[in-house]
Amino acid sequence: MADKTRILVTGGKGMLGAALFDEASRSPTFDVRAPGHAELDTSDAGQVASWETWVKGGWIIHCAARVDVEGCAREPEAARRTIVDGTRHIADLAVRSGARMMYPQSFLTYDGATNPIPEDETPRPLSFYGELKYEAEKIVTERLPDALIVRMAGFFGGGAADKNFVGRIIPVMWAALQKGQTRFEVGDRVWQPTWTQDLAANSLHLIAKNATGSYQMACVGQASFAELAHEITVALGWRGHLDVVPVDASLVSQSELGRRPDVAVLSCDRLTREHANLQRPWQSTLHAYLTDPFFDQYRLEPKS
Image (cartoon, rainbow, N blue to C red; front, top):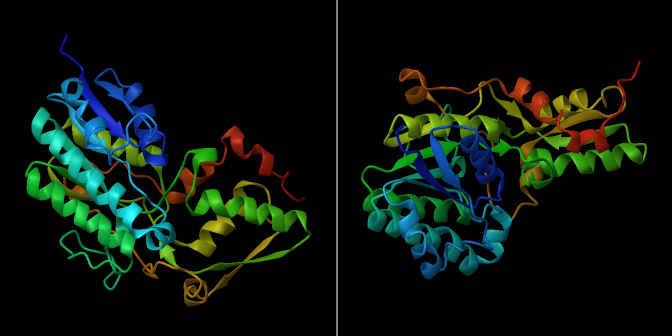
């Protein structure tokens, strides 16, 4: 029997890292470790170096990052240590150990001037977070010519650990519902809400076939934040109780510390061309995600 491929997932307690660990753990092909920040602080070169023997000849998926756009703008030095210095340490680990490296990249390295965003688009970040992520990507590609870069759409997943739009908006909408509100305003910024479970499965599929270079990965379809919020009301039985009212994205962006594109839709041509696109429509994955028992606390019976 062939030896299992060892995979080290940094940021293993985060949304994407946890999904990758769960998915890889179910596979007979992989032996996976996914330490969280307490076990592996990637900004600490010594901690990173301690994994050299274990990951030798395997794969490193570097999920550890600071993903709070506003937080990066408020604490730029701390953000740089995590995103840039941490990535440099992980790239050095890959070089020393002979491990392959996958770098999950953010769609926020793009300005959204062209949509769908082609895979050869030059990154032009609008936020400091995006600038740091692009700087980190260049470190990876310069040191590891065979690196796998997967630029991902915005995602949801992880239940209680969901720090992105879906995880943040549900408690706020629920509180409004409990106060008797019947209308809830949400911006009309357009993106591709993608389940971490699908991103993890698709990423491991690429690793299994020893893919190299850059890919873009996103759900089938696109949605405004308002459309996504409406679908949440459907999934949780709120329809007829709370109506989502779209508002112009510019009204929302005025209160943001870090700029984001108003429209960001990734083209996934390479995945499709290579028959490696495992993504599903966002509506079906959102509904599947919201069946998790964690969301029972927010569930209403459908209004008759």
